[in-house]
Image 1 (cartoon, each protein chain N blue to C red):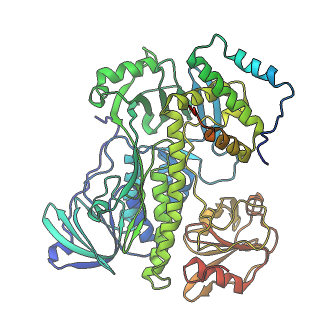
Image 2 (image 1 turned 45 degrees about the vertical axis):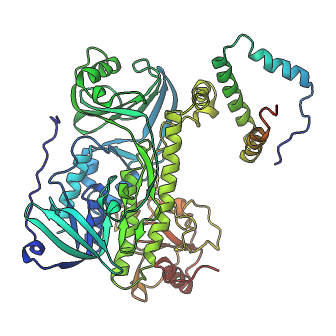
Image 3 (image 1 turned 120 degrees about the vertical axis):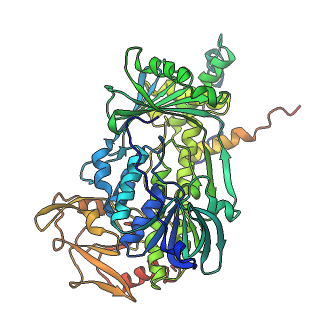
Length: 67
Length: 540
């Protein structure tokens, strides 16, 4: 299966707000923990190793800070 | 330091070779009398190949080293007639539990089904294991030479010359084949100037073997971040004689000399075991570990096995267990080559098959290491996240990695295999290790693996060849027919081998499958057998 990078979330602003809210009042360390748990939960939900690899590659290929 | 064990002393005996002053020639010399070298020498002897075993020491393994011996290694020692005392003395176990702080997050069962002769694991101090192996080697008449240290190795195109130092001075001897099982710091490897590539890990671990009466069950217990040893991990194993192996992770910035002092070790143990538990320290050491392997395990007439060829982290018990599988793979091939029934190139399949196995072991042990000792903040965050989630979410328990315990490799893609043409609903594909099953022979209970032994076997369900041996160009195959030679008393052989009537398996002397078919076909068997001894062409 191909990694879906087309719009797939019905209300993207709601999602984004919830993601930021999740980290409100957390320390850097706590945020890192929450993110790690979130990635693991989502990865298991996807399950397909091929899709996961595509997502990892896509994440790694974004330029970090073009400046 | 050990109170519970009296070391045997093996005397130096002046050999006829050294006394004669002439350079004597042997078919096979094994260098290094640890578990792997001893197993090699015993295997050679059971195959009727006379072997000389040289060991620089005069006793068994000192202190506490290997502990866990896996089912496949026990099956090999069973074939070699020396598993009995190990099973009797060892602590049988199959359950592992993983704790985070004081709560269990994961549990595994390494042998959830019955109908196997050997248990998933036994725990046994290495000195006992070696003692039993030495007894077996001596009973078989192996020429074991204690206090004989190899100080020179001279490889030639068709033989190897050794210089050996003994209490009586130096002498030279020669061998057609040299098996180097002289351990992690192998002299033979260094003498040949071979690169031992890999990496060293910085984390220190403390081993404490303690004698105590404890109520822990016969299970492998592993803690992440336990209350008695915060931020680090701890591993507990029961051994023979009420000796317990406790392995504390110490981290990177520790002083090994300080950490092994009793005044440092005892408080750690009291924190874990309770202030009132009585125990005695038997052995303490601090170790780090490395993951390395030789690029090739065969160098002409020198063959490397065990730690001399590959080093893994201790998590997963993949050191000694894989070394024993090395020689299990090597010795039958060497015998056929020595007898002129197989080309020397058959030994290249030893290299190929066991390098594949070593890579599998290295991969697994490195993955465990990365989980147990995360190397970065992110790596630690993911590790902790797995442990956080494991308590409530089943998927995360499968990610918890406190060591993936030794299982035999399947030699997928080996040139000795004949690819399946028929369909099978069984894990025993060509290259895979044979599963055991309870059987009856002449009305008496037995085990399938015992019937296979250390020879080529044609295991037949239903249709079978005529009585007696098959022989192809001097290579014998013993037919073994269900219903005639044994009875599959619980139906487990049929189940595990998908043994519908007519099914035949060609099985190698190391009890790995070479080929299988749905009906008896002598031509196909002949072709597969020649391929399995390195005399066939590459499969089209």
